[in-house]
Amino acid sequence: MTAIIDVADLTKTFTIRVKTGRFRKTRKTVTAVDGVSMRLEAGEAVGYIGPNGAGKSTTLKMLTGILNPTSGHLRVCGLEPVPQRIRLTKRLGVVFGQRSALWWDLPLADSFDLLRHIFDVPQADHAARLAMCRRLLELDEFLQTPVRQLSLGQRMRGELTAALLHGPKVLFLDEPTIGLDVMSKQAVRQFLSDIGKAGDTTLILTTHDLADIERLCPRLIVIDHGTVVHDGTIGALHERYGAGREVIVDFDSDWDPAASPVPNRGDFIDDNPRRVRFRVGEGDLSAGELVARIASAGGLRDVSIVEPDIESVVAKLYRAPSFDGAG
Ligand SMILES: Nc1ncnc2c1ncn2[C@@H]1O[C@H](COP(=O)(O)OP(=O)(O)OP(=O)(O)O)[C@@H](O)[C@H]1O
Image (cartoon, rainbow, N blue to C red; front, side, top):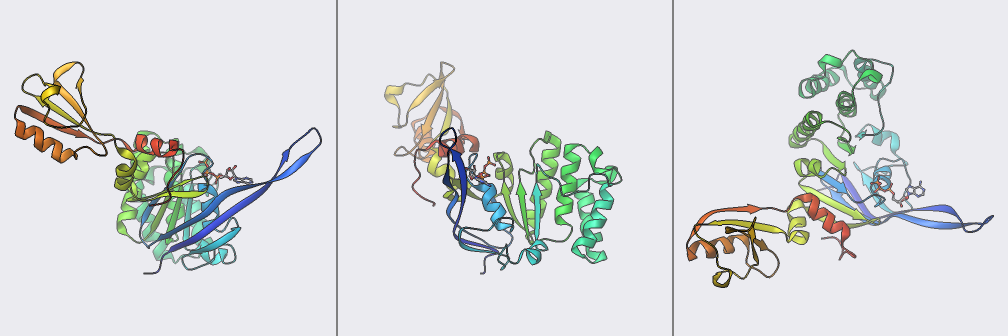
């Protein structure tokens, strides 16, 4: 299968001038992206995350043809982004949470109309896509409002529509829910989830809001210091860095640690000897085995398994002093 995004050993360096004395400046090379490789199949939804300064925006700028790579292989929709930027633009949709692709003084509907002409979209296709966005994003009540009068949540719904009206093959989303209230976030996530499920559009989502990723992206690529440090499912990330799964057990009578049927560490919750938290980690029993052993020893009243949240797993990954490569 041909990849819709095919990146191998992509590198970008910047040369900056730093002050080294009162009147002296020296040139210094900053490596923003350092040998990134990834292949995305058509219709995938991928989260591209990393701490501040990791190289996410620089990668996106190279993928969308804004920046020339220093070295490496790069194809998006079979095209080379910078030399073939005009052809590529018709196949891409881009949403940058902090910037607008809309005309500030025009009503939203007029911006959409202008975009139809710019991208030369057949009237019927435009009408069908706009109708879908109007329905899913509930645009009608502010379609005639000038963009500068829209709330952030309304504008973001407009931005998403603007990015999709020409029927892009790949949609790049940079912080699409930043600053939105809970309701708007939910609306945007639901919309993107519908787009993702339809399977016609490849989604690449860059965000610091990990709930976006959990909701939308089965695959997660994590970058740090310009290098890919994880490429896989969120589940794989939990397995690799999680080690924080907990099994909470309620017993019929006080629990005696000395007579525990399991080697896992257990602690009383709120000093209640009938409520015990067992930690599940490397080397210990799995959660299933642990519950089975406790159940067969008798006296088990209730059990629940608490997954570590993605925020803490990713925080652990970011804090790790060195990574052992992608995987
Ligand atoms: N035009 C530039 N000139 C010099 N250095 C740059 C330039 N653009 C980015 N950098 C540097 O490259 C590195 C990666 O920056 P980038 O903006 O890609 O990170 P990011 O992962 O998008 O960060 P954030 O989450 O903060 O947006 C940083 O060290 C940054 O200072």
